[in-house]
Length: 258
Image 1 (cartoon, rainbow, N blue to C red):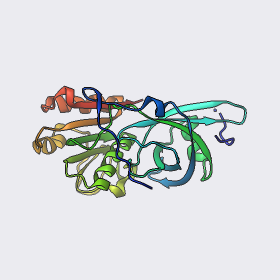
Image 2 (image 1 turned 30 degrees about the vertical axis):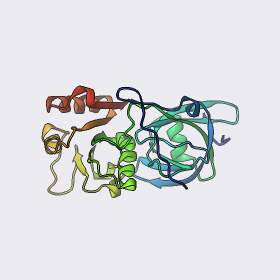
Image 3 (image 1 turned 45 degrees about the horizontal axis):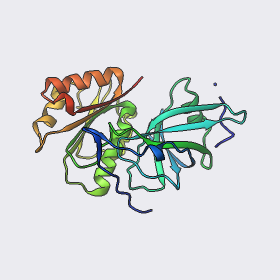
């Protein structure tokens, strides 16, 4: 734990068994145990978002798309807990990365962005939730906006690290290039959508059917498993576009915030 919070190596192969159709089984035993995570690095992504890297020696591993619970404890015993998606790929054993927006008035994100430094300790437990996880065994169509790209980037990194042949496509929306988290990492699998400003020659506008059409037209054998992550409004809008384009409702997984 940390006393600076003030209130206001090997390869991991995750399991792919399902507890019920569409839901990957997770270990409730591992997820219930709080572990000490030591901050080892901070990497700026945008003006308001940064990636925080932690060493967690006993971390049991995770599936891309899962999240964890993080707890900060102040010297007077006050605690604050938040759920955060895991940004790193599972193969980075003993380490995890979280990418946090600096939320106005947010006591946890505010501490991370204004006071945290390498060597600080927090507590984490997880991984949590199997519904939004991607085991890497089926074609994945990923759609995210803002910090909603965080769990999707774990999937992209896993796909690259393992050299997986299964199709994967990412469509990411941001207000402008300066707010595009992980901008330097995107490759040919990524379609970028800018809603307020864009580089010369790039159209500006909200995610629409025209953005999805080329991706859905690629339809691989077995079809896409769609993963949508973002604000409530974005998640509703994107999932509606998918359904209107013919994507089966039961093959759309949604994680939302706000």
